Image 1 (cartoon, helix red, strand yellow):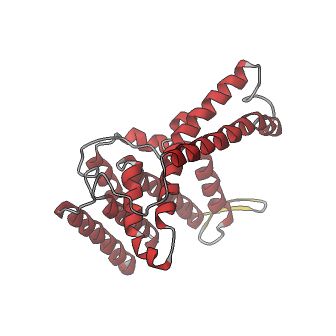
Image 2 (image 1 turned 135 degrees about the vertical axis):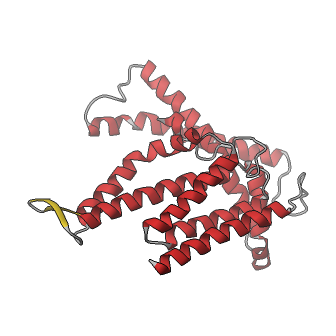
Image 3 (image 1 turned 60 degrees about the vertical axis):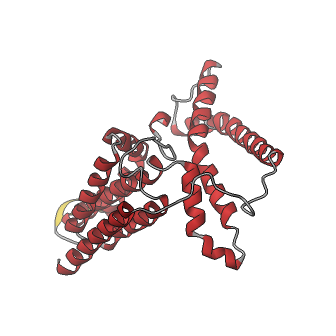
Length: 267
């Protein structure tokens, strides 16, 4: 299951999505999220689905990578679907048993929420899949640069976000090593009752926290040894420059957003 977590990973490539300015990609991702949540009909969701799969096709990243990122969230999706299915009482009654009722409105909302969450995960994953952590840090810092006038620590915030994304795959790999080591020592992590397996997680979480704090301390020491002192006076190896394709991609996204707004008002 841990191998299926692809959050924070970067897949190098030369597609048109990879070559977009990261600042534009962040803005486009925000517009995409608004696109998914501004409409309340399946037509609006269908427009968002077309945009999502079109962007995935242009990125050149296999669809199975996006499906792998969804796999660990299946229990959460099932819980969300069941809550909407049993708690929504409006609409035509389809089946009932004692206090449990299932209506057509509950089924529609359950399916709608699952599809919306799936599109949200798959679409927003494109940002980290096609943008390296260093480039993403520069883009966040440039977008938040007006806040520097308010003495907001923009560079430090962007650096923390970049480090967090960078170390997600590392922590997953560390967790797998700890699980393998505990199993080699005879720990039964996959058997027993729910409470037993929950207690067995302590033997994984404690070493993981210790390893994470040790890694953070080593990183802080390494940055101090290299005389890192924040963003003051620092230069960048790669300068961010916008191109016509960035404005075309932004206009294309705004066009889809307008289509969702129009469909929501008409339906």
